[in-house]
Figure 1 (cartoon, rainbow, N blue to C red):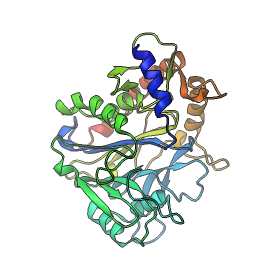
Figure 2: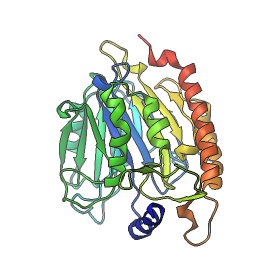
Figure 3: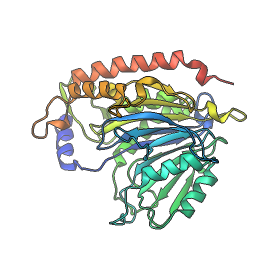
Figure 4: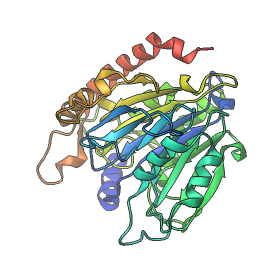
Length: 358
């Protein structure tokens, strides 16, 4: 009966929004005292890459960021970290005032500007304050800086509402695809938000949150908070892709690990898994270095790792006719989820010095 209820809910509530799940975590609840910024990205563009951008003009900053495949101009950053230790990401919001019809979807451009210019949350606020109106955005922008401060900025065409991490009683802020300052009970992502909060809770309580908590637990979990069960429990042959953190539209899981007081801003790490996260693995990125697997080919502007991950994903979602794209082959999912998790954990182990740097 529970499985039947699950199927009914899935078909009744399928939606076409591009969701993301995200969080900002205070150093008070992390294992090593560093703040973290996480984005589990969902989008209609499943191929992406990570690239380093060197400052082109005096006063600008170097940065690394996630870009859509084919973005040879590096015009739209979807999460990134700069040489001042400032990091920014976004989730789309669907319950703020409507987009301006002729000027919209500018979030990636805004984040590119922020990575080039901003050293602190105050700088980001100044950027938002001075952008031309309408801004062409409907988003929850999340940011952290070298001081350890963090905040979400629920932003629409005309302005924003700030939610400061310092005011979060448990040291965590989570956002999906609605804004707390927007219209009540509209937007998307309420179940995914509850999934994330449930999965994070024991790590927050024990002050043991690590980058792997996000990439290897939340971004690989098929826990469903409304049904209060893990869809992979037991031995199902198929499950329906609905309201989990990882979805058919998931294209990356990225964690920016910030700084302790006195650390060099350039020592922050952006742990990056590109492509469908259950079929991918994490590699460490710094402003000075991007692993070759994550970088784009100069001929195709696609990354090798993401191409490999997309091929694995096709085995997880093997049915292409009709509504087949909503169905997950559990055997293939478990195989790739488990094997890629082991690669990630080994990469975390090998790069432990990045976690314990002075």
